[in-house]
Every structure is written in C-alpha cells, then in structure tokens.
Length: 84
Image 1 (tube, helix red, strand yellow):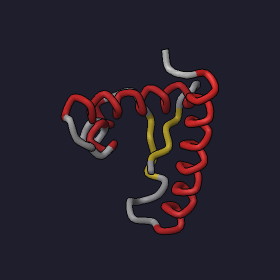
Image 2 (cartoon, rainbow, N blue to C red; image 1 turned 90 degrees about the vertical axis):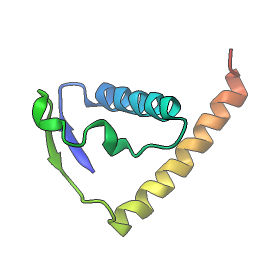
Image 3 (tube, rainbow, N blue to C red; image 1 turned 180 degrees about the vertical axis):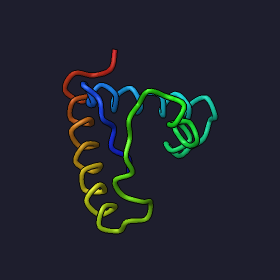
Image 4 (tube, rainbow, N blue to C red; image 1 turned 30 degrees about the vertical axis):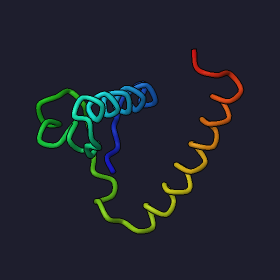
C-alpha cells in the first residue's frame, strides 16, 4: 500500500481506480493495480511512501471488510438510481 501526498488525494485515488479499470478492460483480464505505477513513480511528480508491503494479513482483513461494504453501497445505488 502506498500513500500519495497530494492536495486532492481523493481525486487522485479515483483517477487511479479508473485507470486500473480501463487497463483491466483493455487487457481483458485482471491486472494488479501495481502495474500502473511499478517502476514509474520515480519518473513522476507524485510523492509517495510505501505504507504497508504486500501480504499484510491484518491489512487484507480490514480492506476485505471495506470492499464488501463498498460493493453493498454501490449495488444499492445502482438499484435505486439504475444505469442509464
């Protein structure tokens, strides 16, 4: 897990999620999100810091709960407002 230091980190996170979705769609398979920034961060103006290395079980457990809740919220919004 990387921390990004930016004025609007929420927008940056959303942009990275969108780019990840686009890349997975382009490749027609799941691509790890690290493919977006691996070996590229030092070539950008983004300031980052490794917060947690891959494989941290406690972090996985916490994020798994958050992902489940997010999916429930998204499903509810799609059911309520539909896709147009």
